[in-house]
Length: 223
Image 1 (cartoon, rainbow, N blue to C red):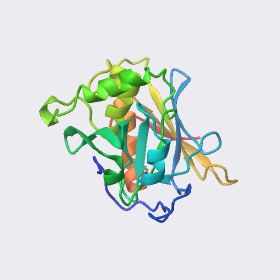
Image 2 (image 1 turned 30 degrees about the horizontal axis):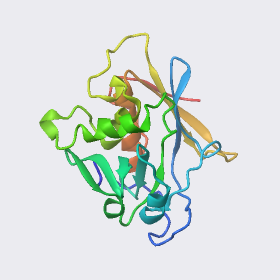
Image 3 (image 1 turned 180 degrees about the horizontal axis):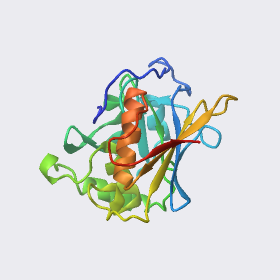
């Protein structure tokens, strides 16, 4: 169910049959817009453990955002509806599938608090997702599963392709935390002009495990 991403990432994942929470070796991030934290994936203040699809199913409630992870692929996001059903953007189509089916061989977690925006009520999150079922590439205004799922939950146009008016004043800062929680840890900061660009690059890094200077006309720097 990868919706964009491949490569030779070096992340390690727990055994697919492991029922309890597992720990994943992965990059950690935080992101800011106008000095406000809008995104956080930091083990120091979040539970980043992952679970089998079967265990995850017992934890999900309607409207939850689910992230499925696996080696050398960008994480796949979906909106949980009910009774093992999720709605997600996959291969250019908004579709409904079984969580246990698409999660086979992968681990996942609930990521409702990854973005720091105010969420919509759960019934509206599900309504946003179901209202777009069946749309395909020519009709879809999201570039990946994460942007679609996040839009369903938060309703912000910035998650849509071209949904944000670029301005010189507004910038997004993505902080990539290498070796987070260790003495040798450091932070690399990248600057973007839109939320869409920031999500795209972060997912590319997650898929490849490689950080490179951007070709998006933005600047990166070390801290």
